[in-house]
Each structure stands twice: as structure tokens, then as C-alpha cells.
Length: 247
Image (tube, rainbow, N blue to C red; front, side):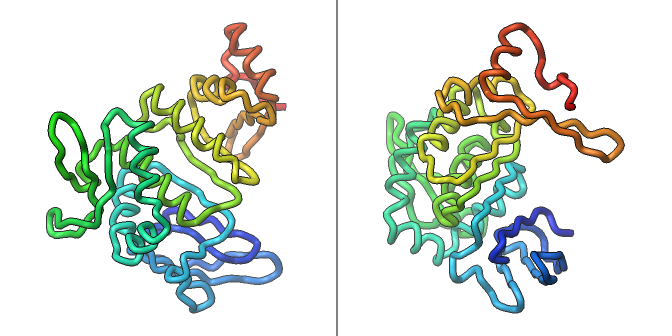
């Protein structure tokens, strides 16, 4: 069963899921896409995973099993070489140290862990030691995988489902600020069930932001759109905007 798939107009695809063959409509034709759990992605019979060119849209789903799969994929020699050649591993260590409570000073080549080669980090506490990334907290692994995927795919549109999942409030605010300050996206979409996340986006001082409230009734989706200032006015009045009926 396919887990998740996102396509762009150029019919390039980024996805990570179980092995699946899917036929779906893109523009005026049909496209067959085959995806393997290890990250092999074939579009019209051509493997595009080796090109590190996946399309304009990146959709990130913070589910534990997908995060583990992402890390395995990133631990391949090809990914590590690409990240190292672009010196992203140095930048990533600093970003993670700024965002997370653990002090990561270095991202290192894959090491052997439970029979698999996994990227590792150097952590400086009272003493310095190395850990495979799979041994870190779910929050750290989530932020790590999101940042690496964002760097590798360089999307024009970034969609993050459950942006606040596994994250404490301080880390969440830091991640939101990082994504917003990055501002390389044509569009940044953050999905959440939390009013705190709406408030954190408001505090980022970005005003070209809309809050879209979705409601599902008998498989029909209805939406109500609020400007971020309007949403905050309602929240400050004690109104739960999640309960504001679309219309």
C-alpha cells in the first residue's frame, strides 16, 4: 500500500513508502509511478532517485516508522557524499544544536548500529561521545530528517503535517522561525491541531499568512480562511477557532 505521494506539474515525484505501483492522472495524461521502501522512485520506467531531483513539492509526514525509513535512506553512501560535498553536515549540526536541547557538534559518516550503517552525531556533554541518529529522541530525529529532506529536495512548496508532533513548545517555535526565516519557498503549509502553533506563527511577525480551518462532514471537506491577525483576535477573545464553522 502506498503511504504518501506528492507530484508536481513536471511529473517529478518525491515519496517514501512501501513498494507500490500507482497510476494517477497528471495534467492531460496518466503516469505510472513505482516506489520502493528503500527510496527507489521510477517515473515512466526511469529511476529518478539517483538524480536527487524529486520535484517542486515536498510533503513531510512525522510518523515514527517513516522517520526511521528516512534515516535509513539518508545513511546511504550517496546521500552522505552529497550532504558532505555541499557542507550541509556542518550547517546541520549547528542548526540542531540551536533548536534542540542536546548539543550536537558534528554529523559524522554512517556507523554500524544493530547490523545497519546509520548516520551518527557527535554529542558534547561533560564528555564527547558518538551516537547513531536512530538512538536520539523522536523529536531530534524528526527535525533532523525534515531539515535534510528540505536541503536535498530544495522544494518550492513545503508541506509539514502535524508540525508540532513530538516537539516541546520551545523547539516548535525555533523550528517555525527557522522555516519562516529561510523563506525560500513559494509557499509554506503547516498542518496542526494546536492553537499554540497558530500563536507561534503569529509571533514570527510574518503577516502574509492565512489560517485555513478544515471540517470534514460525511467525507466532504469544508474550509474557512482567516487572516492570521483575525485568527489571533478570536483566540485572544477566548474563542476556539477550531470550532468556528466554515462557511
